[in-house]
Image 1: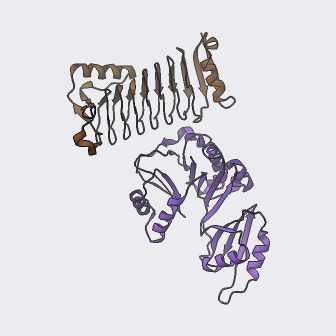
Image 2 (image 1 turned 45 degrees about the vertical axis):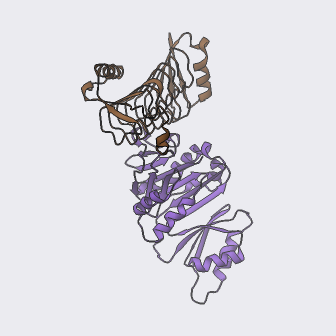
Length: 253
Length: 229
């Protein structure tokens, strides 16, 4: 079993509440997966189009993030002047840099082999760890996170993401990629997917895997079960529904 | 007779259910109210007393499961497996019910004011299910006895592999399941529809309903058509 949650804040002035509203959603799904959790957060990308965001994870806890940053900045590249900054929280760090993955990833593999690159993008930040969802949320201070939308999970298999990631890379838009997914995948699923500016939800034809949506003027919230939505502001006035099988829902951030 | 109120903000589902199972404590109680359910699972399960239970908010999975005698009302939506295995009594969902509503229910009545999700009345064994809205795909799958009244539409494979249960539906059927067929309404069917509608207090014209029942082609093994199974 696993639990999924998603939250998209419609009004920019409410985006500072994203983390605060999302953490109880994630904790509400702890019974569906008490041993691990993850969170993908989307924020407005940097104005500088050259800058990419890397989400780094060090499961050993041995890496000193500021040392890694200094080491990277002092590194000489023939063609590229290195610009880099880093924020870290426990085993995770978000690195902003102009270095492209073909340069950064081999450098990390050589000097910091314990470090995983969880995500590369302009809007996305990705956190994953083992432990109870509550402990993970505390460790990485999820309640302080601000942004337009986020997708979280308690335990999960993410193999199908590879297919969708590939289709998006090949130029499909989210709706097309998900429609092709419905033809390719033969298991039961509920997909909740975030991109830089969209949140998408679709269930397979048999709809064995649960999903509940609550929508107000301020937000769209999705969870495997209603109990993860019960704390949200004005939930009693929200439009609450379960998506029908193969019904594609896409919300724009 | 008195009424007792539990608030799930400061008590547990187990405490409430233990109270609802304790016939000594229930002797002078006619109504139990449950506040702040917030989607909790297994609320009001396994009751065997003629009391009224009101759940004010949305219930989680298996609400009023295995119910006997009690009248349970949910003033909100209900999760998977609403009133599953009910034996008698009445379960009334004022909002929508998720998947598998009324699964394997042997007796009693389940009223859903809104729509029900997939597999409503799967393996029904004798209860009445009355749905104000629509039902999802695979509803009444392998339903053996009982009646399902649907005021809205049905998804795919309605009544697949039906036994002796009967479905009455007012709206559109996306597709019938294997061995399910639309049959002419008899006078007894109109009476049954009127009776079910009156249980829910709804004002539909019984003449507008169709009857779906088993063609009984799957009752006996047909060796000549083994690939059909």
